[in-house]
Amino acid sequence: MARFFYTLLLFAITPLIWLRLAWRARRQPEYLQNIGERYGIYEQPAPEKLIWVHAVSVGETRAAQPLIEALLTQWPTHRILLTGMTPTGREAGRSVYGERVIQAYLPYDYPFAVDRFFRHFSPAFGVLMETEIWPNLLATARRRGVPVMLANARLSARSARGYQRFSALVRPAFAALRGVAAQTAGDAERLLALGAQPVEVCGNLKFDVTPPPEKLALGRAWRAAIGARPVWLAASTREGEEALIIDAWQRRIEQDDALLVIVPRHPQRFSEVAALLAATPLRCVLRSDASPQADTQVWLGDSMGEMVAYYALADLAFIGGSLLPLGGQNLIEAAACGCPVLVGLHTFNFLQATEDAIAAGAAQRVDDVQSLIAAVDGLLAGKTKLAAMRLAASDFAAAHRGAAGRMLALISRWTDPAAR
Image 1 (cartoon, rainbow, N blue to C red):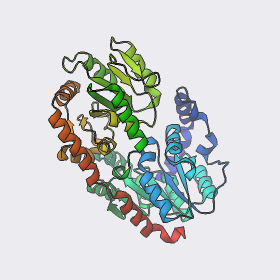
Image 2: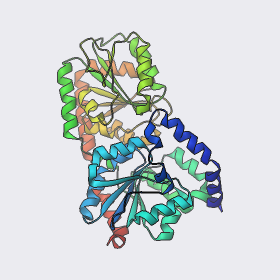
Image 3: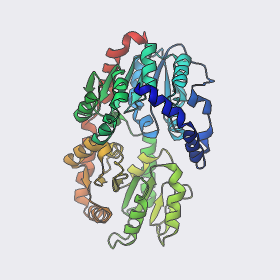
Image 4: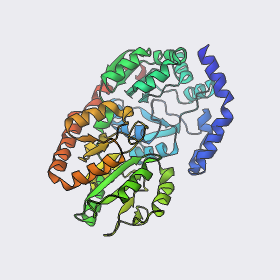
């Protein structure tokens, strides 16, 4: 009954879904492309042997790379169907995988739409990245005999409390999973409490993502062109954070020659942050316009797919989403590039990885924007501590690799008969 009322609500809010698509399309017209796929209507033919991987957006798409590579090796006669929900995720899929995968949007969770999806593609099995739980999708997969796993699964305490409020709806969805590969023991405990089983701890796939050599080379080329001046990066910043950082950076008194690089998390906000900078006396250059000059104070990274290059450029990075109560972004990619990290107080989305990085000496926590700027100035001035953090970051990333192999072993055990 809970799923019945959930479905009624989904139909009732359909006009709001369309309004949301239209609103997003004002900045990203691609949201109005491939609309039929969002309702289970696909033009591309489906290969006979198919493995389905769902990665909702950019971060999950990139994180899935080691697992997708392992799946292609394990089942070489199968194609990979990579589904997502956003145009930026789809573009990331093209950038990372090229023609090696088929891409499509996962339909909205209407019963008729998800049924069309399974009828059209008929995958041998499915792998959902992180925590994508859709009641009708999972109920249809179970009815059609399609095993579905949750891989690289994470569930914060806050999200778990939210799910518990709708336990009559979500417990059957979690129970419909063939198995769950959790990132941490805490994630596993919370997922078990919601009815998922079996659940095994495998670590975080993002540790297995190898920074692309060409992006590392690009960052080093930027560094060589910029010269010896210190560079710090505000990476994956979210709404409200850029204004705080820009205001505080204007008022700092140390490291006057340092270059601040700001890379907003969402591309649709590039112009918004550019306008913020234009309203200040700071000398700012956009990545899309030019490289920073000797007198440039802020370089705005308004580009997609170059975060590794920004980490390779920077002496130090602040990871966005953590100054304000937004949960933070993942620091693993920075660590893999050997870039020391600062984080704010709000890291509940990636709590275990953040706490582990702090314990390893690869990261440092700050209380607010004032202490952020003070930490930046102190670390850029104290080269010894910065060098120690850089080494700790590389060691931290190396020590946690291997999740892809562990997840592949579980997937093989849970689904091998289905994929023959």
